[in-house]
Length: 471
Figure 1 (cartoon, rainbow, N blue to C red):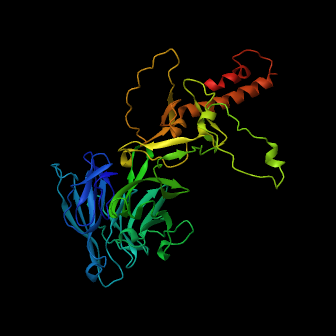
Figure 2 (cartoon, one colour):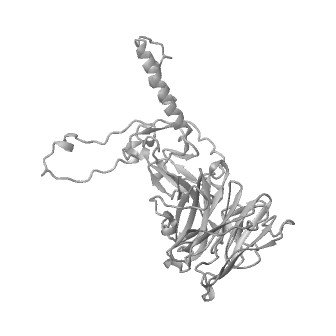
Figure 3 (spheres, rainbow, N blue to C red):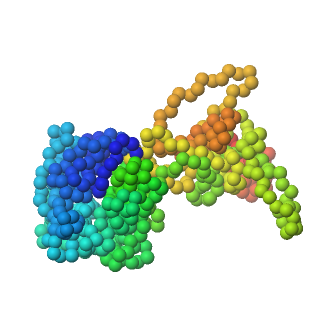
């Protein structure tokens, strides 16, 4: 992300009046017009630490803690609530209204009322809070007023964590908590773990059945690359079922080790949240998640010169040495001119099966769906070189940045060859059509064989076999 994404203990990133907001410890926060470039500006009265924000109806509820956390040697703290109709200080609807204290710790009990986090699910509003000094606790609030429900008693749901968050998905309640140490720059050991339960009040267990009240928790995200100490999870639900999360890293080693906001893809594997990654620039094999076959240009395989008898008939004492990889020039010698479709094929580590991915500048974060797995998600279009005797066509008009936040180039881009210039973004419509065409062809062939295979009509399945490459 760009701009000045410097923040500690960020609240869940929230959209208000066309802008994205997050608030941090000490009252300040960040705002972004596009979810990519961030700057300071939001205002939040009350100070305190580790706020959270949720929108219910036309209200934005804000919870934050004052005191506690061992600061000043104590654990006496209060979780306070307020609301506003807009998070934009320039809006006429911007005005915070104090609700009051909804949870507290007295400094004597083994509890610490800090790090509040909301969950609104099934028409009910829940708030978790707490830290390592005692348990994580859960209370219920009135979603209409933000006040604590009458007679509600805190329930202990976990230990050995802080900066919790909650999710609800497919009948499960998920409790995510930050384990490890914070506030120590590149030496912080913060990481996020999760447990789940059929009830919002627990018991929460991890994937191994270990209760969170006994220190369990399935790993969701830990330090990665040059960013260390992830904590303060916040779920961002986008259109089309796309999910992301906001969090901070205690130290971004490329930004002087400062604490920074981050937005990552959120995926689900076997019913558990997993933090994905936008594909890093590089050259990849792209494989089908269903079949495992590789995305390839649909060209004839160029054999590597090789005496097959050497593979299994050579004597053990015969000399051995490396065989060079096939080059792009060798692989592309007989490629057809014009467009070349893509298909799935056995992976042979050949140039026509390698794809270079490069970032689209200033794209991603909230505004782009995640590209996180090996499912082939590209649509390619190749511009052929001019043929002899023909003038070069005008270059195509500039394309808008891909909404997927990445562009995928054909194997030619790996070596910079001018023979082909290919780009690929989006879903592989040609590939999917080819797969469906092959299935239809197989069914037609079976039917033709049942009829005796006597037809010579070029429109029959057998007659169409050679035409499949144009499907």
